[in-house]
Image 1 (cartoon, rainbow, N blue to C red):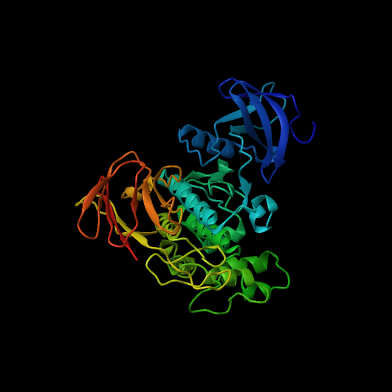
Image 2: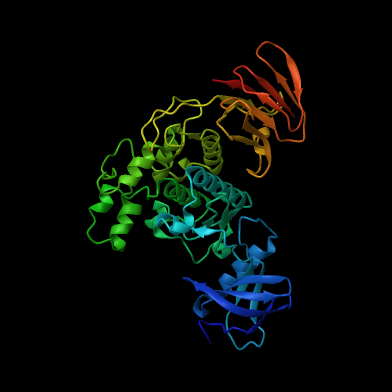
Length: 450
C-alpha cells in the first residue's frame, strides 16, 4: 500500500457493480482515510474505514442513510457503499461528493488563516444561519447528527455557505451508533453518562449552540475563569468543566466562570458587540438548557434571530466596519472605533394573508442593502441569498440620495406619505422617504420608518 490503506490505481466496486479507481489520498481521521476516486460520473470522495471500525453496525447505519433517499447540497451525504473488487482487502467505505475548494474548515477561522481574510461579521452570521437551517432540515427528517463539532462544518468566507461533512455517524432518532460526540461539544448529560441519556436531536441542540457560540464569539461558552484555573486539562478536569459543573461564561446568576479580560479579551469584546436577542438565546441554552434538555433553544428560534441580525447589520460611518444591531433597539457604539452608529431608515415588513400573517420584521436600508425572496415569505424553507428582489441604490446624479430598486419580476405598488399611489415596475426605483408604503404582491407589504 502507498500512503495509506489503499494504493493509487487500485480498483474497487460499488454495491451497484460500478468500478471506481483510487487516485490520491486527501487525508485521514479518527475513523478512516479519505481518497479521491475516479468514476464514470466524475471524481468522487471515498471514505475507507479502518478495519476495526468496518463492522456490521457501521454498515447498517450507512445502508439506512443511503436508503432514505435524502439529498441536500449542504451535506456530503453517503451515496453508495464500496468494497474491494477482488475481496482481498477487508472492510468497506462509501462514496460522497468531493468538497469544493471554496469551503474551509472552522479551525482555519479560529487560527486566523490568511485564506479566510475575506470573512466579515455578515458572512459569519450567514454561516451560522445556514448551519442552523442545515441541521433543521436534517432533524426534520428524524435524523440526529450526534457529533456536531467544529471539525465537521466547512464554510465559504465570501458567501457564508456551509457544507456538513462526516455524515456517516448520523442515525435516525432512537437508534444507537458507536460515536457519542466530541466532549467539548457534548451535552452535559452525555458527558456525565447519566442513566438513560443517549445522543439524539436534543443533545444535537446543545452541540449546535456551542458551535454557534464558537462561530460568532471565537470562544467556547463554558471556558472562562474556571478553565484558566485548571492546571492539567485531563479527562477528569474536562468532565467537570463540560459535564458535572458546567457554567456559562455569561451566566447572569453565577459569575464564577466569567471571561478573564486580560487572558480572554476576544470573547469579552464579541459578547459586548452581540445584539441582546442573540445574547438571550445563548443565556437560555447555556443556563436552563444545561440542566433541562427541553429548555434548549430550537433551530427555528436561532433561525429567526440570526435572520433578523442579518437584516439589521449597519456600517459605521467613521471606520466602515460592520456592526450587528438590535432590530428595533437604540443605536449602539461601533465595536471597532467606539463611534455611535447613525442607523439608516428601516423597512417594517409583514408577509402573508389575513389568516396566516407573519410578525413584523425590520430591514435596515443602508447603502447596498438587499431584500431576498425569503423576505416575502411567511416561513421560507431556506434562506437563498441569490434570489434578490430589492436593493438600496444611490441616485446616479445626487450623492447621498437613495432609493429602493425593484429587482424582482413583479410590479410593486408604492404609496407616498401624501397619499399618492404609483406602480414600481421591475428595474425601476422609488425614492426612500419616511412613510413610503410598498406592496410587493402575495400579501407582502412594508413601510419605511426612521
